[in-house]
Image (tube, rainbow, N blue to C red):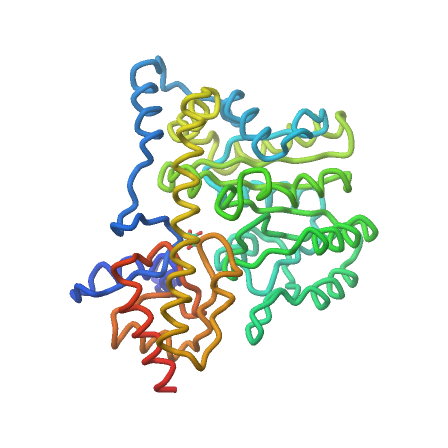
Amino acid sequence: MFESLSAASADAILGLIAEHKNDPRPEKIDLGVGVYRSAAGDTPILDVVKKAEQLLLDTQVSKAYIGTAGAADFNAAMQALTFGDSSTEERLSTIQTPGGSGSLRVAAGLILRASPGATVWTSEPTWANHIPLLGGAGLALQSYPYYDAENHVIKIDAMLDTLRSAAAGDIVLLHACCHNPSGLDPSVDEWGAISDIIAERDLVPFIDMAYQGFAADLDTDAYAIRHMAQRVPEMIVATSCSKNFGLYRDRVGTLSILSADSKASDIVNSQVNNVVRTIYSVPPDHGAAVVGLILGNDELRGAWLNELTEMRDRLRHMRVLLNDELVAKAPDYNFSHLVRATGMFCFLGVTAAQVARLKKDFGIYMVDSGRINIAGITPDNVSYLAASIAATLQAG
Ligand code: LMR
């Protein structure tokens, strides 16, 4: 049977991890996969996570299954973190999922059951795995314009025009904050215009929040979700704790569904849990138990906020540093969008051929689109990075 298969191509983002690892050049820089790195270039376990893990080790009494929805205390704490004051709505329900990807996959299963003919609209561009993940699950996808690569701004008018042409019941996938890959998010006014169209045209917002706390702060970063929750009867929200708790490999996330009323919410909840059972049966426990402990304890929560702030501040500082270096080394080019963007990513503004040259000549790794992970920049490598970018741009 397997002879009918040919090899699948390497994942555009994950494939770079091995390529960078195997490069013997000491000056190499990894701006590929979106994991946070400290100024020393590593991805340490947060101190607060270590503390909570120790607590868990000392107190956890069973590894029995926790059920399709995961742990109730984790779900309640995450729902409050995501929805703020509206988190107690009776028409809102939240389950624990294996990361943001697991959440997206369960959401896809739910959409297919509830509205098999609906189109899901995604930003152009969007996270490279949105399309295969949601499309592979069987959803029909179309894109709306988002990033203006020439001027490094959001194409808000074109985006709104396209959403106006969506059919009632269609679903609009949005990034709550730190848009991946562009790093550019709508302003409060622009979110207002987006939600106007979504409400007027009976569209369903599907918001992916993988970077809460990486742009401004936990509440500001959840603005789009909380605003939209006031305006629409139904909404889907996927969250991830990979980045803000540094729990990447432990797979921690949530799926929240806002339904028209509490009766509909009960039905949706039963369907969501049934979808889970047919995919991975029950979610993994460890990382979510750690997050549950942190969010439920004032001291641990405070320590987490400090570490989150440190990560966010470091990213911001690296954006400024790289921009300053590029202003000095490549004065003919404008990189001001580096500091207008937030979170882990933005586009450098180079061609695929220049991406290949940066890798071959300088050992600098980024995805073909020219998206860079700011966390790969350190005070030690920024000068080499800027000089390499300048040399590559000047070579044409
Ligand atoms: C990224 O965009 O690099 C991250 O979200 C990691 C991933 O799984 O792609």
